[in-house]
Length: 400
Ligand SMILES: *Cc1c(COP(=O)(O)O)cnc(C)c1O
Image 1 (cartoon, rainbow, N blue to C red):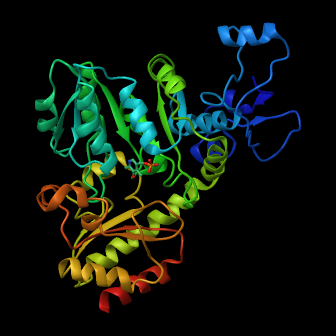
Image 2 (image 1 turned 60 degrees about the horizontal axis):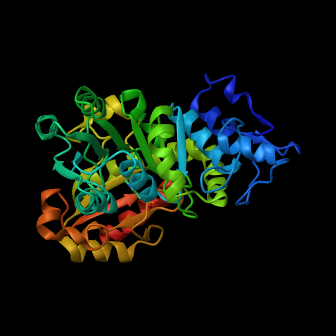
Image 3 (image 1 turned 90 degrees about the vertical axis):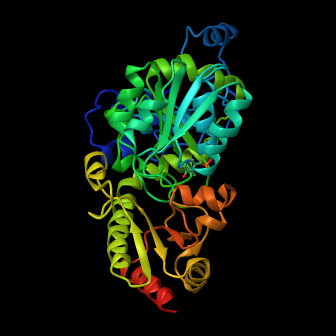
């Protein structure tokens, strides 16, 4: 296959920060220091016998970039080292990862239990897409273990949730829900975007499959779309691989390279964002114009104990409710100078989102109320700017 996959294979005892710099590295015959970007769709074989052997699977090697490419492979291996997964497949986007992970596993007649607070497009997959293929679903309040347990049916084949949730930062007890699923023969699929792979390790808590939108903190600089599905080699090779190979939700080698280099700085970026987010959450909690603050790292978060159990920090996102509803929220956003108005998250730039009119518009007022989103809810994604500048920006915009 490749010239050499570095000590990674010999030494899997590295701590995350080391794996994220060296894990999965394949060096070509030129010994390049920075990982090479293999922008190629296909591969030449030395002989027809070699081509035959590669197709038969007798000889390891790259065959076609729709399902195997050295740069994408390096990204997958580095993520496996971080996540503690046996295997992975890079995808074109986070949604390609979610869709491929679920569709490759489920079939008509199956049933899925999912947390009701899901990223908008994930909700579409569970509520609208899966039923078209005969897969039924039940949405539950992810915080309520009894609700999870009651929702299982004999044909439940998967549970799917995100934690913390978007945008109200509610938590799901990963270990408990994964155990319920395992005891009932269902696979657990966790969308771990909001915690980032640095703060929360779903596999260590019993998750079968972890998916990411790499578009967010893994790139971390708002440049490329990407995603990844991680799991056991049984799941990845036997369940996902053929679906992935034949339907083509593949990751571009260019995007894989951007993500691979993004991983090198992920720990320092996430640490900085989380430290600033915690300070900003405290600042908002003391501010008269902020009615409520949602931040898992604060002791007033209703599930703070669970946050302490399964997350190593409060996360890079802060949600709060501004006094004065939509008008006040819009005015605040328009007054901000450093924070940019967007629906995205996980950028070096600090970002602000008004969920009610953008990401969660589709739910309608009632649907939003059910999951705690009001017209005054605002989600902040904390970037890498100077904390003092960010606090000043927020303070000024709140007082305007
Ligand atoms: C962004 C996001 C996705 C989708 O990822 P894309 O890369 O935009 O396709 C899925 N889940 C969560 C929680 C996200 O934040």
